[in-house]
Image 1 (cartoon, rainbow, N blue to C red):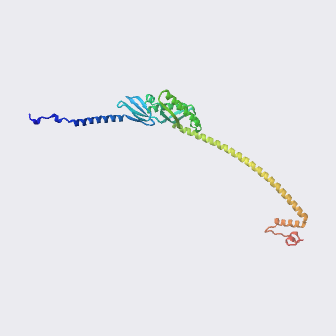
Image 2 (cartoon, rainbow, N blue to C red):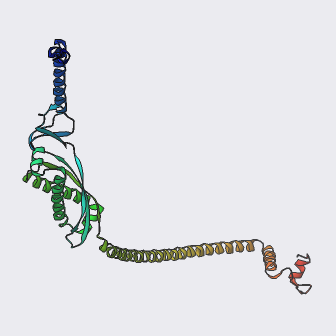
Image 3 (tube, rainbow, N blue to C red):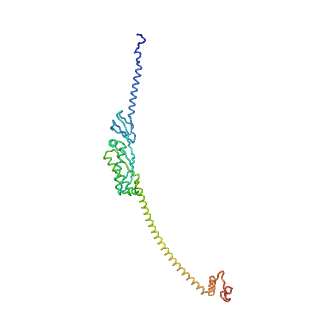
Length: 311
């Protein structure tokens, strides 16, 4: 056999330096893998949330304090549940009032998870918890509104009753949630609006219009009667005032005429000729105008005065 075909295996083996590098690389890879596993299994609990740690699907612990926590790799998983209050918009529901009228009630509710372990055990998910709570709220609203008349529900002046109604619904629902260990708490429930079913709206509107027309006619009749009464009183007072004023005027005129007669008598007594002249001149004002033609005897007192002959 030729020496060229012989391979020395000792020459192919790595020397001691290469063995050291390979060992260090393997150790580094293991450390990086371990570090990656540790980092991937760390989780942070933030303010306003629960962290639920499950092992093979079963809840093993719940972290609710903010901070850094760790779970076992591969066999444990972490999910999040809200710790803050949530708003649940309750679908509008049709109910019957105490006076047998149908209406649509639209509400909203504020709720939160009070015990996450019970919530998971009995309600499973947030969606299922809301569905359970919605059924309980609808049942309570239907029971409470069924004890009120339609006018009491829609009347804005019934605010104290509405406040009491909300409190009754709240207490009733929370009692049911606590009794069934759902681990959730209803903090508030409020009415957004009330509507009539579409088939009832037109009839109610017509009845409301008829009632408003009837009320308007009643107000008009009352106003007309009041106007007639005021006018009659005013006419009577005016007549009384006119009669009183006429009587006072006649009395004053009488007093004036009497005083004038007295003055005339005094003047006639002092100078009869002057008084006769004055009365004659006054008669001229009455009898003589711009187109008056008078035919008098020459010796007539009128003629003598007009011609300037005064005895």
